[in-house]
Length: 398
Image (cartoon, rainbow, N blue to C red; front, side, top):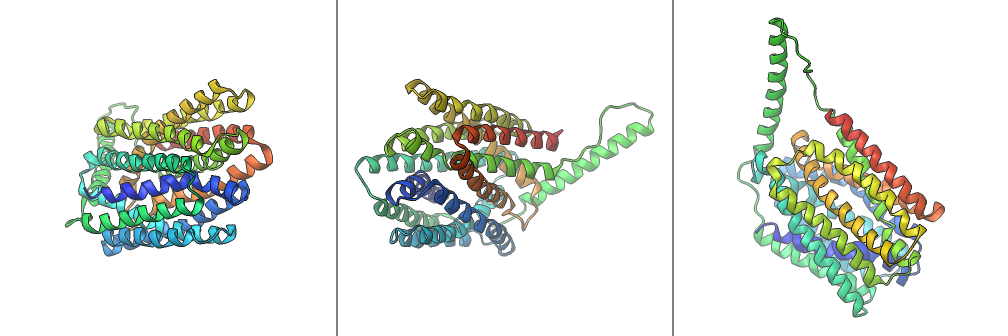
């Protein structure tokens, strides 16, 4: 039940994610560059605060408190966001919203890690992400309906503020801090003991004159974080300008743009549900490599929509986005679980900070590439970015 508040939070940001680029470039007459700067500024500002919130919640061990701060602040800020249509003011306010938005990320990850044992992490993270993705889908569906009824920008943002208020109210009554916090420490001890046991076994075999091809290998944490950063950067680079591509370049209606991304989110939900069902059998190290390799190919395939636009290629693009969403779901669950093994206490915000940094860089690179070189080049660069992420994860787990 404690996850219910996050459902309404994701519903608000699901609506806002697709509505905002269209709102800026359409109703306010801004450019794609304005969208990129707004989202990039928000992500850059949020990076140090991801570390700060993660550090504070672990030091104070008051996770519920920071979730309440996040949801209450966003309720007020989104309401204020609806009161102006000056793009520079909206950019500053959106950056402030991002600061408080990330306040719930670290505490949420810790709650899941401490409520459940390590063997249940994949299933638990997948259950959480599946529920919140349903919330995200509901937000997209709500945006589709409200757009059809002609809701303007101010009304849409006020709906987002109301949903954040509901998220705050439900989290106040449903979320409680865990009584004991020790699961991550146990996992860290198990990893250290396992590595020591592997080394001791190799030494004994060598002393006994036994030949072995096995090597004592430690995971390359740096390459894991590099792969995570590259994945986030490339995903943001591809998806930030994509609503504008459908809306402006292909001339689709705002409602139809919401509908397209609804299918993408449905794919992600399917990925979470599969991870939930097969959590304990999920080979996270293999998943993070394969998902990047396939997404590289799918990103390149989007060029066909530009070369030959028709109902058929648009339908294939929707299918492509669904598959990319499905792979994203598997990737996120795998990296969340693997990162919580590696990240020590007091550093719970590292995962969110890396995703935020990649997202910020991707916003700038994606909008710059789309504006100055076109979407064909953007899709080509995105394919290369996912391949580089694959190389990084391959180096991490070999």
